[in-house]
Length: 242
Image (tube, rainbow, N blue to C red; front, top):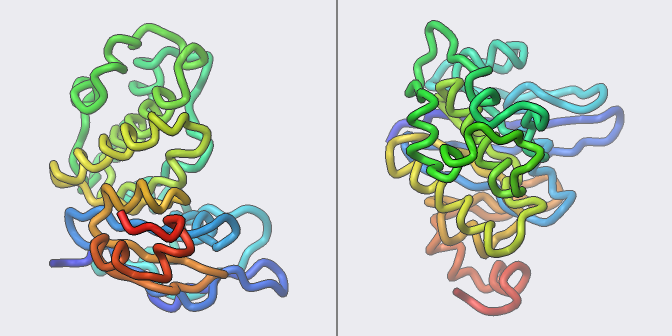
């Protein structure tokens, strides 16, 4: 299976402090790869740097290849045009605009290589958004705002969709619902890199998982392999395998 994203020897440094220490990561065609781990492990730093977004003055080294083409030197908007679309933590919707206005604000680049999603395509993935189409996003639930944020990203025709902590701020009953929508997109052919602190929920939807600890990949494998790992069960699943 071909790698849509191939990250090698990735290091991110803020001043004299190195946040990522030579991370290697691949996302294969049509899979949901996840980066899991505790707060402060470097998950958001990793995907932000892959997308070209970093807070503060940062030094990034290593390679980032999209479909075999190095994009590490591209500005963030050029990476979006190339097909790397990030939904950052915090949703990122215009709350004073309606659901439909939020979706129609985004258009794919003329030469975008990912699937082009129309507004109606987004509604097919998230039917409840169609029911809220004329409502301002400020009136939506946290889960619905997250769906709008993902829908906006789909409108950009991503070759690789990156989702940073989509479950943050959601009620527990909504977490798996949002993640299952993401799984549906992958089953329909989208390639997704998911960052998620909720390891238990991630195991339910991901194909492969990278466990990040203190800026390094501590373990990597299929969801089944990671679920069977005693160390992961003890540290992230309360000592119970699911």
